Image 1 (spheres, rainbow, N blue to C red):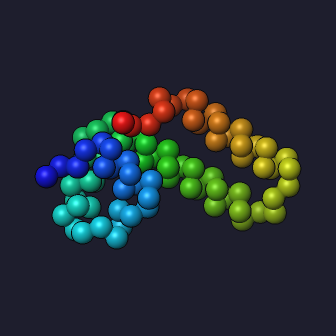
Image 2: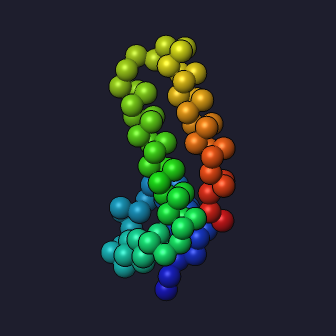
Image 3: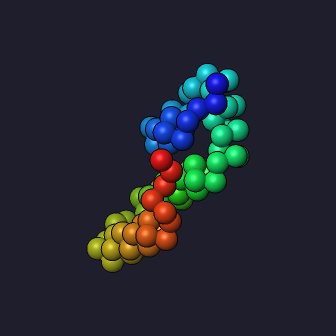
Length: 84
């Protein structure tokens, strides 16, 4: 059975997709291919994770931290708030 948007976003946000059963992973990936909103949400989570990892590689100073915060806020305001 195809997962709902709510199920997909919870699975993505909890980072449990890779540990899920094969059938659930396949159905979730299919949902992401068909649902633009969930696909955007998945991309936003991926982008935020990459930004956070990048920020943690370098020493955190107030200027870099402020720039990271602004980049996150800019991306959040550019989207529609994710899927529902």
